[in-house]
Length: 373
Ligand SMILES: [Zn+2]
Image (cartoon, rainbow, N blue to C red; front, side):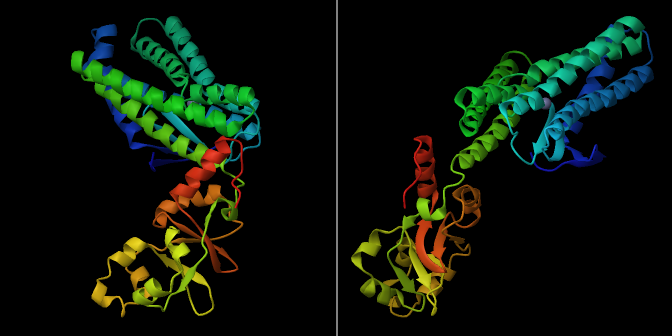
């Protein structure tokens, strides 16, 4: 979701707003001033409509914040650190530093948000009835109904929406497996996002411009659910060590060897391994080359070019990890290290981890087995 406009600290939690909130607020203000208030309460001045619209939008923003703060307060109640709150298109994201300790805590933290919106909705509608049919009444009625809609929307069962978190809590209780429940809730979230996109597109084709807003909303949910999916996947392999997940390397080449020396001196078995680790004078692994990289060296230069020069032609270095490193920590980092980690024992190269090894560890975890190295 990126970073947004900082809004200071509330109850010790850093709050910021995504740019999409500003767009939503401007849109709502325009809608209220231009079409809602003049219809509901005819006869007031244009200025009165705009003042009421701006005030209503600001209060709406505060109710959004109240929804998110309810999540944050509940999380703190369960002893969970809350990193930040980011308000976005249709609500917010409360960034919790850890996963909830129990399914019950997960459910409560998820439920208090929509319950707050529902309660505020009830208060708004109640006050509107008490105040009567003036502009204030119209504003309160609008705020009340939008908060009810917000509560219902957030209860749609797909992560990252609150309904998705509730689904996760229920599945967690059922499977007794948090990672599996989180993966299922994220999958449902992606499905939900796609459905909203399609629905919005149809509305746009047959109805009007409002459909595009639904497409945007669906896209937001889809991308957030994809992030959740990735996180839940690497959570599944938490505890698996690099030494167990890696493909072992039987051979390492001295980095001062030329390409020709390697092709002549490398044991046949090593050619079936995914990479060739390079070691320095002390036998310490620091880089690697692949057959594909070697192929780029013209035949007439192979006797002159050293392996470390071939390795240096790729700007990104491999990630260097120890045999005891956790694969769940390695997986999300690979993308910054040309997709490969060199596993070392005391500095000596012993294996390699790429997307293939990560996928293997994930499949084994899914099957209830630990990789055996
Ligand atoms: Zn919420």
